[in-house]
Amino acid sequence: MSTSRTTPRRSPSRRKGRLVAVLAGLLAALTVWAPGAVAEPGPVLAGGGAAGTAAADAATPRGDRGPDASSQTIAPGDPIFSGGARCTAGFNVTDGTDVFIVTAGHCTSVGSTWYADPQLTVPIGPTVSSSFPGNDYGLIRYDNPDLTPEGGYSLGTPYVGQQVYIKTPQTGIHSGTITALNATIDYGPDGVIHGLIRTNICLPVGAGGGTPLFGPNDQALGIASGGSGSCSSGGTSFFQPLNEVLSAFGLTLY
Picture (cartoon, one colour):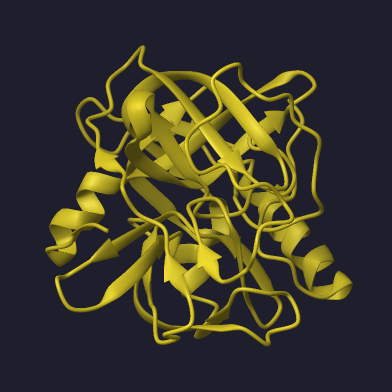
């Protein structure tokens, strides 16, 4: 089984050291952590990367803006940047006063201030919370009044066999089905994550940590944690359930 490099992008020397550590973690034994949990060996954390090629699903989701859309609107699936890290906006949420981006916790744990462009000239705002490992989610607060968070999605309830898809401007749309709930995965030196959604969707190069998982009719289901395999031969991907994040912070979708 092939694995793709999916941690946030950093310098070549740091990536090389990181890859060695991740490969060592692939040798960890499979462990079941809770009744009903599915433990998975070998996946790597989702991060940034060069844009890949993806075949579009027949049903294009609402709000698929394309790679040339204005950076003044932040939509689910858009890239976000912090120093050497490149990740992905999951969903926009609110506590009734402030608006936040939900993305992967392994991203917000290494980035303190986030931007809408790789040149770091269009600020979004700061990381205000991270939960990783154990969970894999974090919040970035919008502090830039010139940015418009895209909203209008409804919260869905994931179930095994449900048809789902991911999408980013760089990689297009990839679709598949949910194959398990309450999955536990071991990222080796990066830690263990519990309670994830497992799908048979590959995570293409360019689909960073936090990539949103959708159900039919614009249902918001989760955000990407990591995966394994390749889009040429199939793959497995894991997502932090969005309903857990909303419950943890008392938030609603924007």
